[in-house]
Length: 373
Ligand SMILES: Cc1cc2nc3c(=O)[nH]c(=O)nc-3n(C[C@H](O)[C@H](O)[C@H](O)COP(=O)(O)OP(=O)(O)OC[C@H]3O[C@@H](n4cnc5c(N)ncnc54)[C@H](O)[C@@H]3O)c2cc1C
Image 1: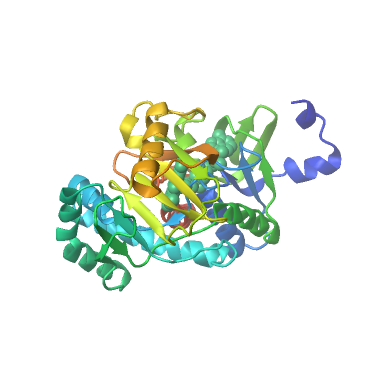
Image 2: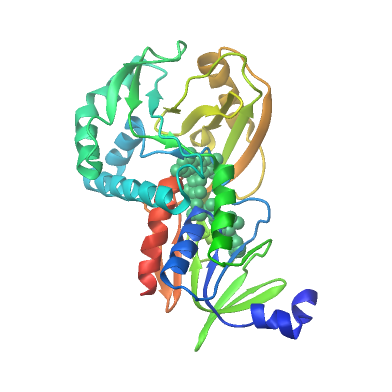
């Protein structure tokens, strides 16, 4: 606590004075909440802290799909949780994507709604999904007013099964631009951001909430934990299971790669082009789910090999050089729903975005703010 114990009079007036809201976690959920709270409450003192300095847990480690679910993914959700749940989840994602674009600006985060497709390894999987398209289209229209979200189409990758399903409204963003835009918005709304601070403890006092870490101690009227996969670490705010994801980006390809966003196998695997005509691919967590319930950095060889294999055998026809490879952490709940809950007077959690936080995160952020009222 060397620095904290030696704060000057001037520094104490900034950091020891009670805040109106402290947001723990500066990913898409925490950032959206902080920005909207600032917009609605001019002059209130807000602070955002994050344990990471250079990036984020998932928001700047993800694949950047702005998506509502591929047909086989939506059918899996329907099978597990029923059609009413699926409709309500679609509604949240649809609403969330509108909040995302409005909050951060489509061009600032390089959001491009170019459409996408689900591709298949075999005829059976393609036919099962194709049979259900009328039901899925009807549901999507009910939620969004968009007709024919899904349609049968010829696959643009000759090494996958010949049938694919096009996805009309879907897109991608540049997650690095989103990270920059988050920081710019904090600055525009006069929200101090402190990276490299891990909150380790919180305590409700009679006149506010005390947040403590190794080198600091803050006091606030309200606290939002937007800690996603880390919500089950100390301080435990929810029993959320982490799910580590692996993403790889190839060296530039020598021929044009199709535009759009592509899904395989119930959304578990995904790929698309990124700047410089590179292939981005990630997924296959389902091949070793138990080992991937971790917040460690590391490469699971089974998963890494599966990514290499599908790239070589189905997507490109050869194994490219991988110029980038990294982990990010998703947060999973028992029922695929984010946990948006009041923990105590003035303490709210919005975590567990179940790998769909680009749309669910902004939705969860505004719901969380409602719980403070
Ligand atoms: C590899 C991968 C690919 C993905 N691809 C997509 C995709 O294409 N489309 C999509 O919709 N979703 C995708 N997701 C999921 C999506 O990125 C997340 O759901 C979303 O970013 C969650 O945002 P968040 O703000 O809730 O959490 P995060 O972005 O994880 O932010 C939580 C923050 O809280 C901080 N934190 C946690 N605990 C503490 C503490 N005690 N003290 C201080 N700070 C703390 C963390 O450091 C972290 O930065 C992907 C995720 C991964 C990992």
